[in-house]
Length: 85
Image (cartoon, rainbow, N blue to C red; front, side, top):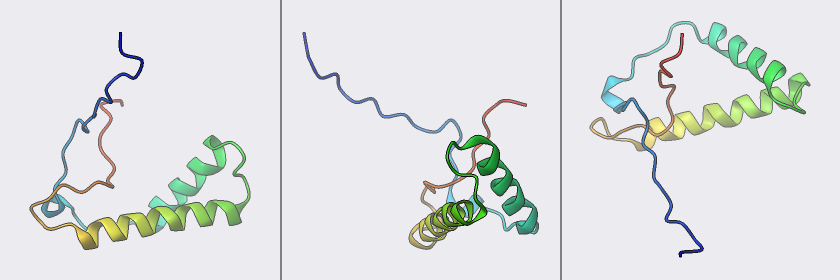
């Protein structure tokens, strides 16, 4: 019997290529929703300063992903549909 199980790689249910990305026109609304999510659902992160730092980290990850990904490659950092309503 193996003590260490082989790592299973899980792929996202929806694959998103960089060429499929579309610009957003409601950034203020999206940032407000992110702030509200962190304030209500993440333990220990209720101050706006900590929330802003977390949001900036996420935005920098998204920017880096889009800058370093070619149009024919999958983006690693994207909101994917969950199948839930």
